[in-house]
Length: 150
Image 1: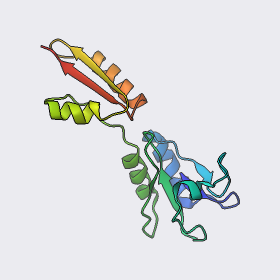
Image 2: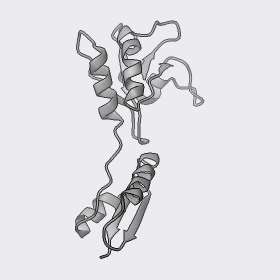
Image 3: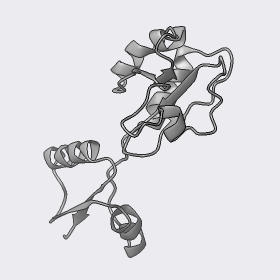
Image 4: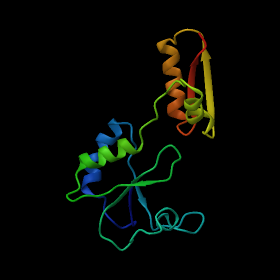
């Protein structure tokens, strides 16, 4: 997300990076961070209270997996490649993992707000694994955990 005011032009780097982001599965957008949210606060006030809103520096952040927004550490000169890298790393989908011990089961599933455990005998087919990965992509904040009972 490129944050700024309604009258501000989009940064050149975002315009150049947008097609590459889409190709990588990231949806770029621009947001008027000075406009009021339903709460009456602005995006800056709600999520970035320490942000200097009078700065002329470009402001980019990523939101994914219901996590708090992550701000990009901008280094001049700002390149489209650095924006694509930031966006893809900040929004990557967690991998599907198997619990190999009670400790890993606790961290991969029990500590999540939502967790789905799939138990199966023997080895999992590629079709089944693809279905589990699709669930993992859709419910990123939850845990999707396959378990071999064989």
